[in-house]
Amino acid sequence: MSLRALWLALWWTVAAWSPAWATGADGGCAPRVLNVEAARAQDGMRPAQGWEPATLPDVWTRRWPGHNGSVWYRIDWERGCATAGKGEEPLALGIDGISIAGEVFSNGDLLWRDASLVEPLSRSWNVPRWWLLPASSLRAGVNTVWVRAVGLAALSPGLGMVRVGDARTVSEQHAHSLWRQRTVYFINAVLCAMAGVLFLLVWCLWPRERAYGWFGLMALAWLAYLTTYLAETPWPWPDSLTRGRFGIAALVCYVLCACLFTFRFGGQKLPRVERALWALAALGWGRRCWHPGRRRGPGSGWCGRAPWRCSWPTACSSSGMPGVPGPGGARCRTCCWRCAGWCSWWWR
Image (cartoon, rainbow, N blue to C red; front, top):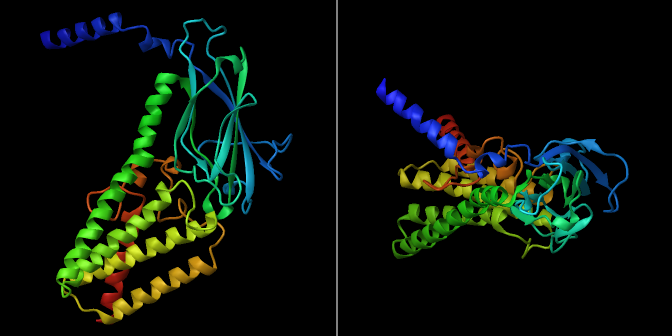
């Protein structure tokens, strides 16, 4: 009973002496979003009509299948306080990603624009950003954030989560998004590069140990696929669609190498299964190169989604590389194991 009373007294003490910023954000002064709408733009200009309600994060192909080009997003928000004092903390805007490229305006004032809004498009789909909102451009009532997203229907275009708040809160949320969307993948890529070079070197010294060679190729294939999440330009590819095809081809190569590494490491000889896997891989490569599809591409489908498009952060936190996070590779690896096991059972 005394311990419970002690904890209660401690809680009341902390609540009573908590600084003003602990309650200021929720004390009626926090900015709040009033409305989010989206509209197609045929010529890239801001449309005057055709606005439809939207929920962020948004992928516009769910609303307008097959639409290529530009879509404008309108986010209306207002300050929680009727007036803004001189000591008020500056407000900031944060966006988790714009697929594939875009530009951002605050009440008509340009805040940021991608380096290229025509092919080859810049790649901002997995790059979180934030900006301080100029106090001179803010109004006393309703303010509007305009975001133009440019993309292709085959690559799941749209807009990630948008945040408006005090600079400290937005910067902290940006740091979390940056870790989840960029840093984790960069660490993954470095480890894959090291593992690939090391195991291929071992295989060159002992050519009979083919398992090392397949593991090295698997790591490098996964590294090539990770460039889909890290690259900010489509270079060396001429356009975004070709860049997307390369990412899917690298993922198919990774799955094939993972299966062959498993067979070699386990000392299994399954020539029919391996021929079937090679045939499936060739079919996948061919389909990616000559028939990209309408809604498949990096960041879409069952083998990978942008972190800001996931309902739960953990949905994009498992890679095929042991102990390293990454985009959706665990599901691909599981499918590979099941397919190989089924083929093995069928031909035995």
